[in-house]
Image (cartoon, rainbow, N blue to C red; front, side, top):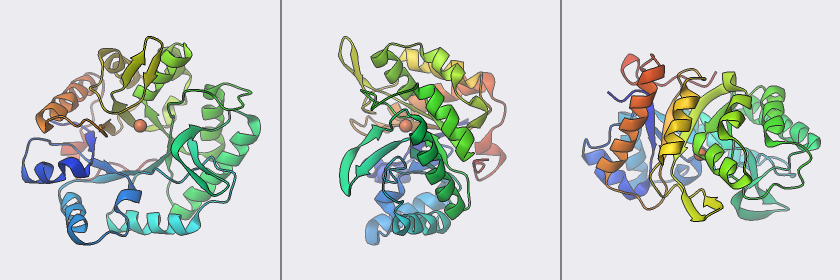
Length: 285
Ligand SMILES: [Fe+2]
């Protein structure tokens, strides 16, 4: 039984995924940017995916922390894409990736400051009003804070409260940040607005130096991150959980075995089975 565990959909395994029954996620997540406005072969693929599975979406380029105005043309495309595929969940990173018209091709942490809280919360509210749904924002991994005047926890709590949005809790990102910045991951999770967690990400990372981990999404999930997930599931309600694997993709059987481990942990703490109770996972509330 695959209780509410999904997989990040990748073109690398699209054909095998659709033609075999090796991977059986409760839902698939994709980045709208990679699929909006496409035609031909890949359009057919996404239609097949939508027929078979509920889809959730995780954006890459909204750049909610940028100083310049929101890209409304882009948001219009996102809105019609969500509608076209009946996608009820849209999440984005608590970061910025554009500045002064320059695309930085990276998800940089927002400055941990009072003025950022107001700015970002206002933009989240605008996005939510426009999309007519709550969105979830994700805690990102970062390697150095930018102009920080307060803690990341204070900023996340304040933004989620002010914007009245949901939180996508990336458990691996908490582990990576806690390791790199030397704080206690469990204490961090305990300090988050856990009643607002509407979605969870799990992934692997790579330790490149004795004191540095890079958030690659290219390795297996390690035991301490499973432990942190176990700790998390005891403190949040049952929500969709996604296995993210972006590079160095193993055999599908292997991905399924990682999803099975997530199922096992959630079975210990969560009772609702989205995969078998209804066709669509619940919209973020
Ligand atoms: Fe993530």
